[in-house]
Amino acid sequence: MQGRLFHIKKNISSPEYMKVLVLRTIGNFLLFSSLFLIIKTFYLPVREEIVYLIDKIGQKKYVVLDRVRVQDEGKKLEEIPKGLLAKALNLKPVEYLIPEDPNFSIVIPKIHANARVLSNIDPSEEKTYLEALQKGVAHAAGTAFPGENSHVFLFAHSTDYFWNVGSYNAVFYLLNKLEKGDEVNLFYKGQRYLYRVSGTRVVNPDQVEYLTRKSNSEFLTLQTCWPLGTTLKRLLIFATRVIQ
Image (cartoon, rainbow, N blue to C red; front, side, top):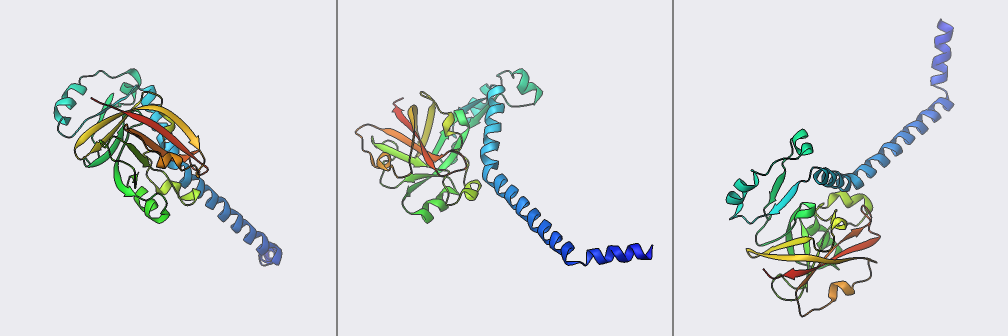
């Protein structure tokens, strides 16, 4: 027995054993670091996709309200019956979205997006817009505001490095779900402006002509990074204003 214990102690203290132990430790560290980066990068996009899928299967509806109409409209919405999945999971069949900030917000019911918009953010100043995108959606400096009968440009979900994607708001992660005719609402200085999606396009980051385009009629461009979790391309959503 003593001989066997001596042999084990000898093996543990041998250079070969220590080498294997160090290599295993480094390998485990690299593995867990990689898993952490993957989870950090894709957690928010995956979460938003799952929520969207559940809402779609459960036929959940999102209704846009202003702060004044919430109480009256809420009473009507509660009377809507639940579907089978909504009953099984105890989900609300209808949820109403109140703008985060009536002074400037964007609300897109189809993808349950609701965020504050920060005005006059320079898209060429990385430090400035990255700070803004941690708080909400950015309004590109030099473009119009709602109601000015010109081009309004908003952007979100941008990053300096791919592993930092999860550090920014997730409000535009599902922009690719939008189709022609879908509703986009902007709230500006207490007034609601309704837009309808007219088209989409994927472009290279250096194609800035979509940012600087001019118009004599009011239209909206929404921009996000594409594909999800990367900064390789830009997804653009175009929408025209509907006069109510």
